[in-house]
Image 1: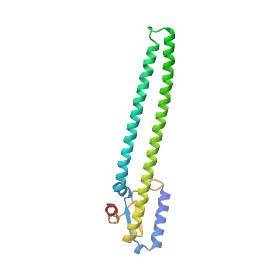
Image 2: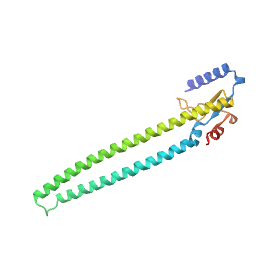
Image 3: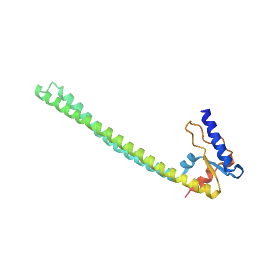
Image 4: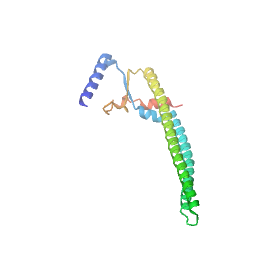
Length: 186
């Protein structure tokens, strides 16, 4: 890890030296904070919550159907043990119970697959929504940097592959997070 820190520091030093340190205008931003404050993020989270609630409601209805099937299986099994019935009637009830049990198992499998599919769709929807917002944020940061004359903008919330903050230290006056948040407000 020490080697990668030295390598990164060397690369940044070389970049700063070649860009002309005295003329270089640098800013830092907490993109995680900007992303969270973005109106589209909040709208996307509200939509996702509605979609999750709809899936939960649908899955609860499926669960009710499964509970009804379980109750049918239990009743048929109890009836198959009833001494009041003839051997032939008990055999018929056992067969009905087995059929109902098979139906229940198939319904449980369908419910599990449906839930997995819906959850996968929600995850994909979330990832697509997030990526769209991130792409927009990156364009907005670039436009902001150009408008304000910044040569370099570093994300303070980002981590390197070694899970080390990209910007280990930055002077507070370099932070433009709040300015970007204000710029994104409708």
